Image 1 (cartoon, helix red, strand yellow):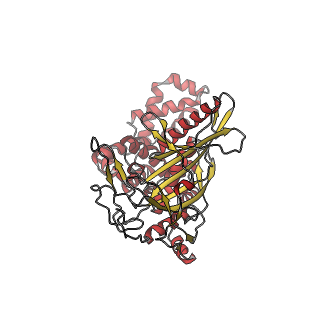
Image 2 (cartoon, helix red, strand yellow; image 1 turned 90 degrees about the vertical axis):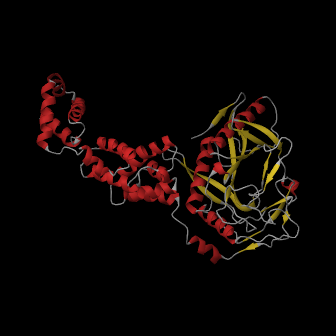
Image 3 (tube, helix red, strand yellow; image 1 turned 180 degrees about the vertical axis):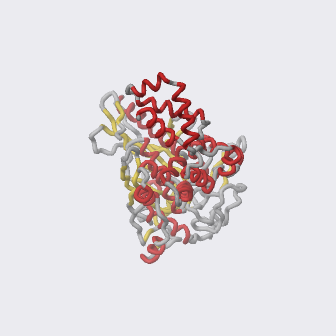
Length: 485
């Protein structure tokens, strides 16, 4: 699964680390009681603290602390019972304080691990360096007036979990797998909705390159606020190639912050990358250290749901699914819940095949999620029952599925009204088989002369003659008996 780029002077390996900002699911902000609802009129979700008015003091939101610990447990990470909030000092118009409240050298969550599924049975562990809590900034809007910039502070003070990976990622594909897996985990946990298009999950992508075989960590560049998995992967591809071209020409990489332009897939310089001392970090004097007990952590651990990795293992062991199918089904919690409803008391492999191949194909085509599916889990289960009890064939079931979407009717009603019940009467099947055999003596001779694969052609002809209603297994068995003896 290596991703090696060829330069003029040598082969290059890409080294990638991600800083993912996940908005905490909470009704209120990290240090104020203002609403965190998405949308709303500009500056509608702002209180005196968010506006940076003198004398306003921050008060920690315990729900946000619980959500950070919950996420840390989901990442199999070290939970730090004592952490410290610091001030990260810099000026920008959408940050009224003149500083961001964050955690610097003593975060709430330490090292953890995320396991990536890379296809074909390949798995890879990626280290998580830390998770810390911090406040989001507001939003500057430069397109509302020809000469003025407007400021919306609705997001100012919203709680973010910044999840920092180790520089363990080595390809755009691994970046995509990491972001999808992290999004899956926080959604299972209910700590972040993972909606990158709304800005509640976004990432900074750090890229450097080095000669294959080297362990050196060379100068990196950071692409800020990338808001889709696809864009993150494209940013890695472009930036890695840019670094290689500079090195091949004898140049040096400048450590800087860059922006990814999604319209043309390129990056451009934003500013030189600041070092930690440029921000003058120091413990926030208005906030004492955040301290909680082991009992607090264990109470949260007791409420953790079954996470994607454990669920995938259960699907393989209990349902007999392949690793690949199980991985697809557990990637989104809603998909997994839907599958389990369909599979309950039924053939789980049949359920998985229909959901992955047929239903997911339909949803992807229409740009819908499983929650918007036109076919409920109950109705799809009824369709599979009709296949399992030989009421209809798999081929007819495909037609019934389409009719269920068009009419909204249950499969039993459609089968009854359309007269689609499978022919299981051996006499009727035998009559159709005899007609096809009699009409094709040349092909009969070929089968009996050794071309047994032609039996499949005869099966197709019989199914066609019976409008797909004959039981395929019965047809196949009868043809073999009559043609081969």
